[in-house]
Image (cartoon, rainbow, N blue to C red):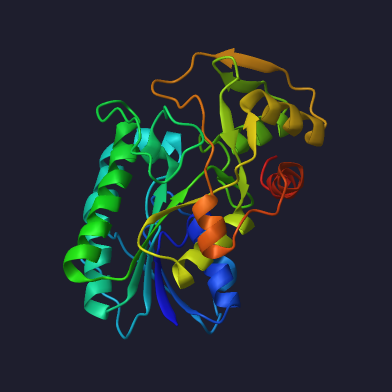
Length: 310
C-alpha cells in the first residue's frame, strides 16, 4: 500500500506516518510547515518507505506513481492556530480538501478526511453520537475551523456519492501526546508547559467544562482501523472517559510536582461546555476502544515536554 499523508509534519500526521511505515506501508508525506515542524519527521529521513514533498495543498497536488490512499490531515488544528490563521484554515478545509479528493479520484485511491469533534460545536446532546448535527456558530471566532471541517465532510460525501470515491470521515476528539507544540493553545500542552515553568495554570471559566482526552497512540490505531476496514459514514474516534478541566489541571500538577497555582480567566466565545464521544460505532465496526488511561498518557507526554521546555 502506498499512501499520501497531507499535514504529515504535524502532531497527528507524523504519528500516523510512523504507524503506517511500521505496518509496511509506503508513505508520501506532504506539508508546507505552516503549523507542522520538520523536527516531527526528521527521524524518517532515509527510511526506505518514506518520501516527502513540501507543498501547500490548497494548490494543485501532484504525486508521481500510483496511490492506494490519500489521508488528508493538513489543517491548523489548535485554537491559537486557527484564530491566528483564519483564512488559511478555511482554505485548507475547502480548497485543500477539494484538491486532495481530486487526487484520490484520479488515482482511484481510498480517501480519509481528518475531521473533528468541533463539527458538533457547543453541543446540546451529550455524549455526542455521529447522528448529532451539531450546534455551531458559523460567524463566531471558532467558526473558521468548525465550518471548514463541516464543509470538508460535505465535500467528501459529495465525492463519495457522485464520483464513487471510497471515503472515510474520522471525527477526532481531544488528543494529546509527544510532538504537541508548546503553547499551541491546547489545554494539555498549555497546562504541562505552565507547570514545568512554574507559571500559573490558566483555567478558562470555572474549569467545570468537560473534555475527553485520547492518547495519540490510541487515536492513530483507531484511524488506521477506520482507513483499512471502515465505511463512508462519519466515525467518532476519541476517549469517552470524561474529565473536567480542573481535574486535568490537578493531575498535571500532581505528576509534575509543580507548585504552580491555578488562575481563572473568562471563558472564550463559543467554547464548548462539554465534549465526550459516543464511540458505539467504533466499537462495533472497528473493534476499537482506547487503552491508555489519562494518568499514563500524561506521564509519557510530560516526559516529552521536559526535553522541550527549559
